[in-house]
Image (cartoon, rainbow, N blue to C red):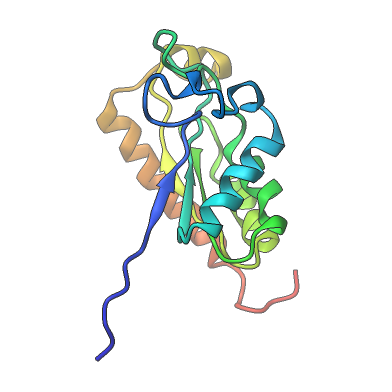
Length: 171
């Protein structure tokens, strides 16, 4: 019987989880909204032996004071940019499903999976703020139970879309 293997993942948020991480002279905070920053972070995680990197995303600006990184680049775009520069690490972006049609979530993660040669994952998240709801104008803010029920439905639709092609089919 083989020994269980430890799976090591890291979530990348801003310049680090410590509220004052951006104050370090080597934090790279001034480059946080560049592709180079993220390719360096993810490449370093791969070199350090991490199995996966989780990339947070949201449709709104994060609340908080000076200790919070306010704003994020698109997680799928970061993962896609990094895919050809890495070879082993799993790339797992958050994809909010509250205001995103399941077809678009499916297409984004499938394209990432293709670009990364099968290393893509999907962390489902929901949009909880009024700002995000107003940005789309389709519906009001929902309670958590309704949001996650809708997320369950989106997951089912995305899974069915992925399963609608035979393995190895030429599309």
